[in-house]
Image 1: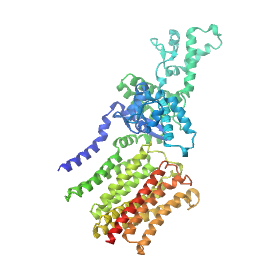
Image 2 (image 1 turned 180 degrees about the vertical axis):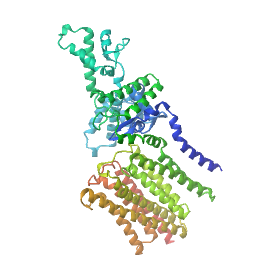
Image 3 (image 1 turned 180 degrees about the horizontal axis):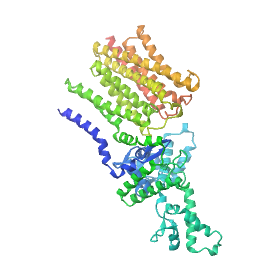
Length: 620
């Protein structure tokens, strides 16, 4: 009863997590839904803020507050954000080189890095002059940290135009009256001046034919303010945060670029609402801030095209997906399933099997819902980058594991599902730390038909081969421990069946890839490294089948062959991209060469160890 209560409590937590997060920072609800264009994709500000904070700190929240709250503070009150420890510096040598005391948490504030920034820029320039392939981890880390600090500074300058500054000082009551500025104020903001550009132009024309001696003090103030406007316009170009849709064309603009380029009527209204948000936030009036954000959302939709409006309608789903973290919950439940499997060795009670089954199913539900959400959000199959392929292969592996358990009912499928799901989602988590996982497609992959056929099929083949590989590991462990022949035969027959699925899918996927290549490049096969990798999987699986049916290997040899098949998949999946050649090399496997070497060495050691134990048992 107690274990059942624990399990139910976990499910309740999963269901309530989005609700709890939604209650936090309620005044940000409309602000989070503001559309931002980044790297060609229109996304909610909530996602934008999460990715930015992950890039800086490796986390998607700060001080238990949502990333959007931190971004609002940085944009509208950057002096309050200066002490936030958001800069992750993994190597303490960098902190020491900057004369900063290394922190145990490895995170530092802008206030701590500000004085060391010139030194950091110098180190970055020195590291950047080194060939990328010859840089050390420390040098790459220096470049990353410096770029993050530079980006932070850019964001802190994004809304300087909204606040009064001494560069725009007007004390003359007459000039303030002519410009329609408040009489009880002497310092004004850039936008105060920009919104009166027409009136300022008329006043400046009146001074055109006057000599310096004829220009009075108040008029000199106006001329100084105009000169400062010119300097500010030059200094604050090409800043990030592209939230203003263009009057013409497709390129969205940052507020600064929109103001500098001359505002259309629609853009003027949007800038005015950003001004209201900035003023309300700085004053701590969050109700007015939320109302301005709500008005902005309505106004920005009036400036969008039907295709963009269709994307914005999916923002609530995307924000729910990001807040719910379905793959994190899936990973937790898969780990639980494996723990229940370990506990089952100490007790023969059926409750542990039931809990293991329920845990895998409970993990599979958010795993599936997360994939479906990504498909709806991006309107394409979820197999276009490394993060997505890990998620999808994990999904296929768990599905096959559940299928095995449906026919087997002996923990074999559950253990396979738990191991595959956990490992693949952990690896996916490593790639999610690099930023936005819902990226636009590279041009070569921009075909939903072939993504849904070739890429999906070949990726399912990877998943099935990995499942066969895990079963091979399990057989070798069982044989090493001296399990009964009945148990070994059950694992062997299951492995053989999954191998058949893997061979069928990889063969079909490889042929579909050839058809796609023929349509795109005019040839079915070109011996490209990626094509060769796919062919290696097909040939290796075919060799195993032929060797088995020709009685050249027994179940022992087949298990070893299945473990090796996982190594073949890893090479075909990632290794060939490290060659950086060929039409299929998309450049998204940097940093995994060492991981592949370590993996291969571990597998070889596993095979040698278990094979030695099995041979000894057979000899006795």
